[in-house]
Structure formats: structure tokens, C-alpha cells
Amino acid sequence: MLLRFVLPFLAAFGPLWVRATDLNIYAAASLSDALKEIARTYEPAGGDKLVFNLAASSALALQIKNGAPADVFFSADEPKMDDLAKGGFLADDTRRTLLSNTLVIVVNATEGANVSAPADLAAPAIRRLALAETTTVPAGVYAKAWLEKSGLWEKVTARVVPTENVRACLAAVEAGNADAGIVYKTDALISKIVKIAYEVPAASGPKISYPLAVLKDAKHAEAARKFAAYLAGPEAGAVFRKFGFLPAP
Image 1 (cartoon, rainbow, N blue to C red):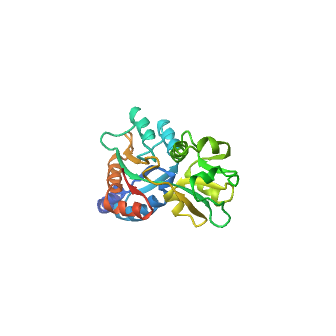
Image 2: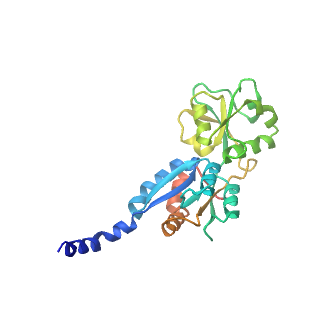
Image 3: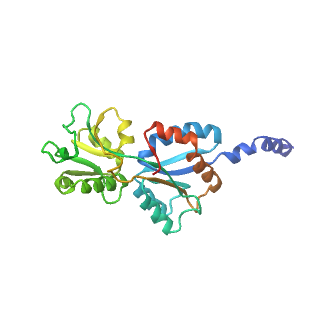
């Protein structure tokens, strides 16, 4: 008797249950605000819940290589994605480069050092320069490459305060724990506590790119591909532009 009532109930509501998927999105910390806004539109429309793991791309790639259950990886540089591709971690034909960015020098908005040009980073007033970790974290790698190209790295290296990721770098400047920092422009734009002292021209700065891919062992491969396609579409693109991201080079 009970089964006669349960089966119609499952028939009516079962499809909703099937659609509800917890999709694990591993994404660079600099994408945090844009992705959270995208989720507020995507989740009600698509039925899938987006579970974000937001950190340095280097840390996320290492987690994936160690078996973390990622469905989608959205990196802040190509080398991290290249490494996963060489290891056979990416689903075929899902990798695409979606976005770009630029670097800026930031100082505290109220008590910041007087910086108006790159050379000012070598001035005595800059005792502590916050950078994301410069050997593995994309924001730090990009910043070091630009400083080297500008002939400033040897002059400032003793002052560098390494941080876990670009958001930690921003936080160090906000808190006054660093006199200046180098972050993505998109990160600077979300803070009311720092100001942009200098924007690195895209033509002379590093070529920043954000590749996206579905993982080969994604638990929810179909849902992952659907979300990846959405991120490459016009609605998500409008959100990325709102937060200051540039189209892929």
C-alpha cells in the first residue's frame, strides 16, 4: 500500500533530485567575487550547487594531483593547467582560456606610502613590499617577472613580504602590514581600503591568462561541462567585465 503512494511521489519529484548536484569548482582566489555573483544566478536556474575552493592556483593544482575531488579547475595561469594536462588530469577538449588581467601597485588609501611610479618601490619609504609567493603563485610569478623586466627586482627583493595568495597580499596592504603591494587590478577594485598607485600597462606587463578545464575524473562530468560552457558564455562574461577582467589575449 505504501509503495503505491511513494512511486507517484518519486515520479513527480525525482527529476528535481537528480538535477541537484554539488559541483566542486577549484578556482583562483582572484576570481572569488565574480564567481560568487555568477553562482547567485546560475544555481537557481540550473539546479546545481556550486561548491567553491578558492585559493592560489598552485595550491589547487597540487590538491588535484593528490586526488582532491575537483570537477572544474579555473587557474590564474597556463603553467598550472599545463602541468595537469601533462599528467592526464584534464577531460579531452574542455580546456579554454577565458580571461586576462593586469597588475597594479596598491598602497593603503589613508596611510599609504607615496608611490606614483614603479621606481618608487625602491625608495626608502617602502620597507615592506607585499607580493604573492613569487615562485609558485601566479600573481607573485607575474609580479616578479614584471619587476625583473623593469630592472627593479634586485633593488626590492630584500623588502618582499611573501603571502599565500593574491588576496592575502591585498589584505597585508589593507592592514598596514606592508607599505605597498602588487596585485591584480580586479582585486584592487573590490577594496575600499587600498588605492591604485600605479597601473602596469597591459602592453608592457606580463601576459596574464585564466584557463578553464573540466577534470577527467570529475564526479559530475555532464554538470561540469555545462557550467564550464556557461562561464564561457555572455552572461558570465558580463559579470567578469563588471569586476574588471579582460577578455583572453
